[in-house]
Image 1: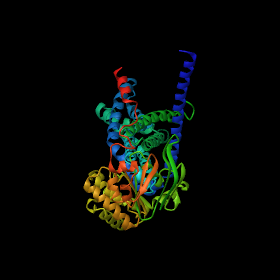
Image 2 (image 1 turned 90 degrees about the vertical axis):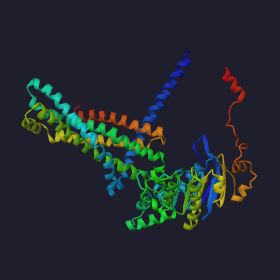
Image 3 (image 1 turned 180 degrees about the vertical axis):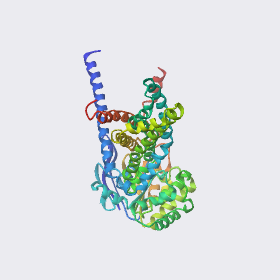
Image 4 (image 1 turned 135 degrees about the vertical axis):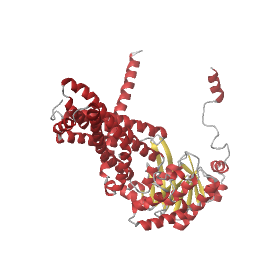
Length: 272
Length: 264
């Protein structure tokens, strides 16, 4: 291969890389403007709150089964694994603390967020994408109704409001699962289980930080879901790709945001 | 009602879709914009609806130039027009009743019993009062088109745009839609623009026709003038002839040469 060919080949690769980066940055900018526009045009969603309530049902209530069952099993597994380790050090009565802190600080928001992205996020993207593919969004615009205010904003707020409640329910069921296995099955003292949990779990440092995480995850997942739906190529393949992108991008966003938030919350703001 | 002056438009600069199109649509008329698929007629309809803006020239609709409108003015203008989409574009999560009530709920503060009366009135006009509680998935193609028409006229528009309203309809549904387009236009005192390639069917309902090919208006006239046109493209199109200015074969390399290549 001559030098000219090598240079040409390298130039081609750099050009493709440049295009990919430009396109990614452009899309990120578009998504940010989209979020800003959605928030600014949320008047309808808040004024006619029943539109948002319908989306809370769609995103939140219909996700309850998977969230509750998963929470219960995660709590039960935590209790089994935790007891196994704690009893070696004679600290099995701290089982309640381990289960509660694991769930409230990390597993509740993160696992509920991942489940929410798969169940509700994908459904939101598919619904908006199909509305676009079947010209329902265009029809709305032709009726002088802003689809971002009427379709996107209620779904956005429905998701944002649902997510912290789902995460809280996940943690609650998880703690109940831990109680069933730890106290009822293994025989850890019930008084120690609950009282140590009560003493060790701090409202501000643990519960509030967990709630903040779930709110941030709720905004991220729902933002990605509504944007991918609205930006989907209006074909069957386009909607399918958008739905996949929602699940993948939201899951990665949750994990990355979790690291950043944990580093800020549990190290006093100093780098971990 | 609609004035289009020397309009050019392209989705990208290299491929113009419309070139120097000029036409005028008078108040109260039913106008047909016809031509083969890909000739630019749907794009022209979308320029009239201000979904796209011309890259050159001017589009004036209901007395306003579409290029100078901000979002509020655009929506104000669109409240005075209705558009029937090719497959109806009904909201699939709402019943027939809720679909027709949608523009009324969004743009008026009417009491619920008044909205009910208006919805019943519009559904009666398209013959589907009895289908009010059905969901869009339960409707045939023709019924969905009629419900969409009822929704389209819910706010008594001055201008109604039809994008391929006859596609995929059986003869009975087709006859119903043709009659409704004419009747609704005349009873509402509206103006209608029909974009279609179903030329024989459309010639029976329109007052005036613009014929398009390759992004230009190549012929215009009353339906009888179009039927009698000697313009080769119009003649081929109206009579459905296999060959003519629009060739049967898509441009390709020489046939024998390609076969020889295949043998090698």
